[in-house]
Length: 477
Image (cartoon, rainbow, N blue to C red):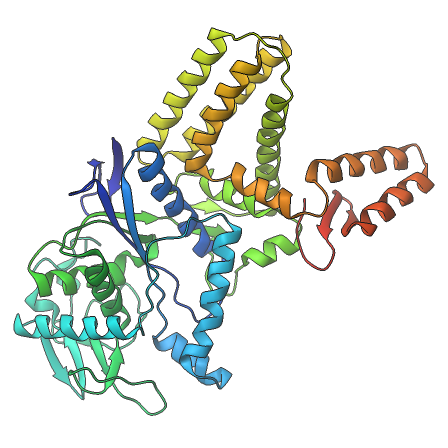
């Protein structure tokens, strides 16, 4: 059984879905005012592995909703600056997210609602009406606010000090600091030049926090849902406000488990668009790195620990992925006909150890350690001639099952298939060219470069070695 650290209780707990063996899971998606950066995608990759673990390791069905916030202060400002309608502006970043998600091997989720979808706007207005009936709202200057004083449980998720809550003060901004513990806006009155809707609460548009509550309850059914997840920066105010809205409207717990992924750091700072210290998935590719190596890097540190990003660390991840692929290629070349029970017992034990690590609060670093210890052990067995074709079938099946959770090998194989030349062939050519240069056979080195260029592979030499990319775009290693 999976054990997960529940932010609400601050402890690890046994996790299983409440009914029908189906995990009802809500993930806070991207606010689409810009292209997502790799700090965002650390969260999405870790939660993709959690989704896969619940399905393929634990045997549950999963119904996951991941939203797009396509109306808030930032998206409106971006559309106005670009001089285009809001939907046209946000469409480009929704498409970019889906492209980057596929590039990193994320499984498609069951629902990807947008806040401005008609059904969701209606659900938001219905939620406000329920909150009003239960005495949690008030109006001021055409806007509708949630009155925190009416919800005594406010602050339980974020462990807020109630002495710091400012009674009667309110905040209108969709994004605000952790110190701003005040009544928050549910429905914003129409302002000049902003998009507006009216479904019974007066002309205006939703506040950011309202959107996720309404979409989760509409698409996942009666609360409590099983699992709500996102980045650690969303604990307050966003997730705290979601709880207040949802529970204030329904009178029932909103989510049984809350899972949060820690920050990706660059130069000791959180990677953030507001700080300007961001890299995107295409940026990583343009530097010649595989997306599969980035995926590996994201899960090489436990999701509840901060991850320090560096290009050297990404190169180490690339080397780890290549070791794994080299091993699997070697398994394919096994020729012996005999079975070796000890090898098969070793594989079975590795499977069990991997599963135990994954089920212990998604311990992906420990799981990767198990994988590479198994690789080391099986390489030794192959060296000793103690692996035959029957064993190779068992090994292949085990690593296929492991990769259904991790999603690294399948992604690397997709990358290889997309290349005009198989990656192992490219790397052999680079090694042959390096050897030619060492023996000062520059004619042979130039010939290898030209041959690769004719097939769409561009080589780039640097003091740290030679990288390759596909002509016209990033890629390679």
